[in-house]
Amino acid sequence: MKIKISFAIGVLITSLFLHSTTIANRYDATNGWEFIAGLGFGNIDNMLDNDGLTAFKRIGAGKQIFYKYNALWGLELGAQDGNQMRLNLSYDEKMALGDTAVQTYISPAIDLLAQVKKRVSGGKKPTIAYLKAGIAYRSLHFDRDTINSLQKINPEVQVGFGKLLSDHAMLSLGYQGIFANNIGLTVYSDGTARVKNIPTQHGGLLAFTYFV
Image (tube, rainbow, N blue to C red):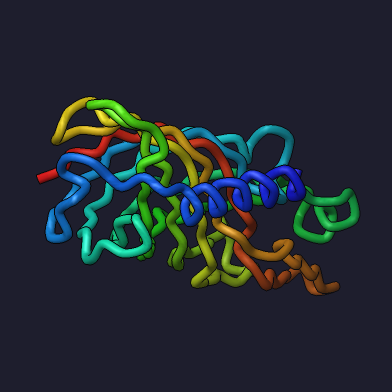
């Protein structure tokens, strides 16, 4: 799965920088604002059964800053839903923690992304390739005080394609990944536990963007 994702990202990056056409219509502007609303579906690692599978909503606001290398560059600030799940435990871990399911809650994520967009097809309603990369702030909490909470900043990538519907609107579909290591759970003999990381989450995102 990681190889396929890395290959897809590599292909899109190559397309972004080697395609010779320029962004048309409002994408020639370097001072525009954009507002994004989207729906996604993805998975959070280290959770029990299908608990990690989750639908989420995302909103964001972006600013196009400059045009260079036949592409439009900018920044985006966004936020999206968290999720409540049960942690995946071995039999021994579950017994040591009281033989009950451990409920976890990942709070809504806030992210700051650098973005680049480039036209990859012609016509009055061209297709736009995009790549966004930056950081996401998340926090992890449990249903008991015998396991520590965490706040982490993790790397994030979004990559995909959008179709311009008009000079002011675009519909896009892409991949989103917020990357981290395994949760790193350690259970102690006194019934307490510690985690080291907030799990990786990845999924697909369908978004509508309005350009001002």
